[in-house]
Image (cartoon, rainbow, N blue to C red; front, side):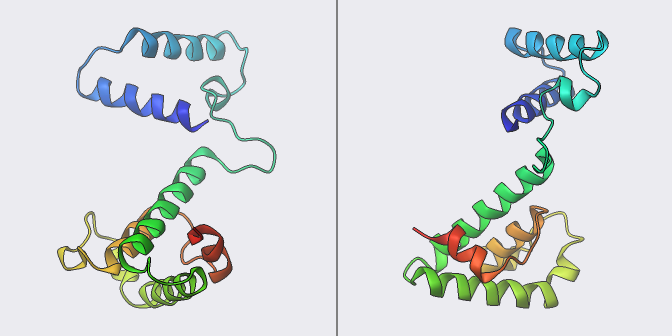
Length: 148
C-alpha cells in the first residue's frame, strides 16, 4: 500500500515541477484511473491500491506511525544507545511526557524545528511529534519499538 502512495507522491512531484512522467508512472496512473472510470472500483483509494483492510489502519496513519517510530529510533541511537532497552524506554517516555506538556503546545504551530533543538533529544521528539501519529506512546510500546 505505501509503495502506491510513494508512486503517487512521485507523480505529484513531477507534475508540480512540470516534468514528464516516466513510462512506468504513466502506465500505473492510467491503469488506476481506468479502473475507477470503468467502475471496476468504487473509490479512488481502491483504484489506486491504497485501501486498508478491515481493522487495518489507513495509509496516512501507517505512514505517520512509521515516521514517528523512525524519529524515536534515531533519538535513541543518537542519545541513549548506551542504556538498556528498559532504561531507553523509560527515558524517552519521560522526555516525551514533559515535551507534550511544556513545549509541544507551542511548537506544533511551527513549520520548522527550532534551531536550538538541533543535536539535542528535543530534535528527535519534535520529529516524532511532528509525524502526526499518537504521541507520547506508552513505555511498554517504546520497549518493543526501541529494542535491539
